[in-house]
Length: 41
Image (tube, rainbow, N blue to C red; front, side, top):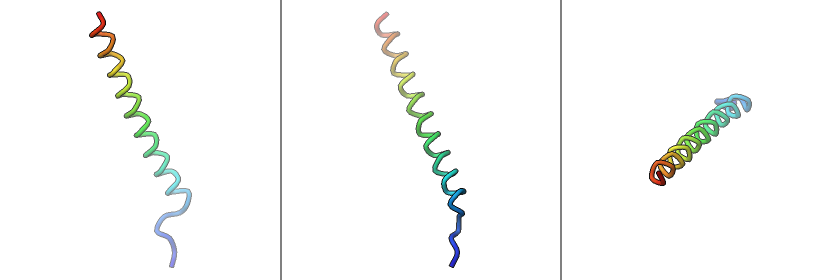
C-alpha cells in the first residue's frame, strides 16, 4: 500500500502548522508586552 501523502507534502503541512503556532505565540507575547506597557503608564 502507498502512503496517502508524499513526504514533501507532510513536511509542508508540518511547516505551516509550525508557522501558525509561531505566529500565534508572537501575537500573544506582543499583546502581553503591550498590556504591560499600558499598565505601567
